[in-house]
Amino acid sequence: MDESNYHELADSVLEHIFQTVEEADEEGVIDSDFHDGVINIVLPDGQEFVINKHSPTQQIWMSSPNSGARHFVYNEEENLWIDTRSEDDLMTLLQEDFDELTSINAAF
Image 1 (cartoon, rainbow, N blue to C red):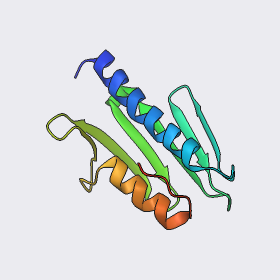
Image 2: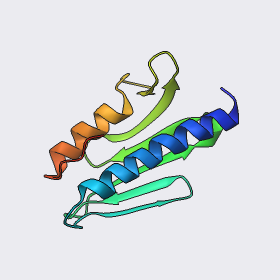
Image 3: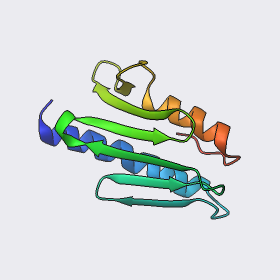
Image 4: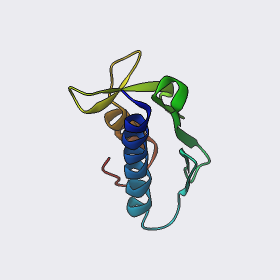
């Protein structure tokens, strides 16, 4: 995939994740920030997700307090970001982790 296409796809999914968290956090208990391709999501208990672009490998990296560090590559056939080790997709894994760690109803 060419570099501009990677950035467009990665930026789109990161923006979607950030907006989903912002909209679901009706009570303002999550501290979330999105800057320079990096999302930081700090939960009320202090646990933190970090999700970012890793341009040299054309991946999205996620660090989750529940599932640990993961690297995702874009699969054009499935239109999903797939974990390089487990073949889980980013949105499903993020949804599972978020649901397990919070009571906030975010639909990724």
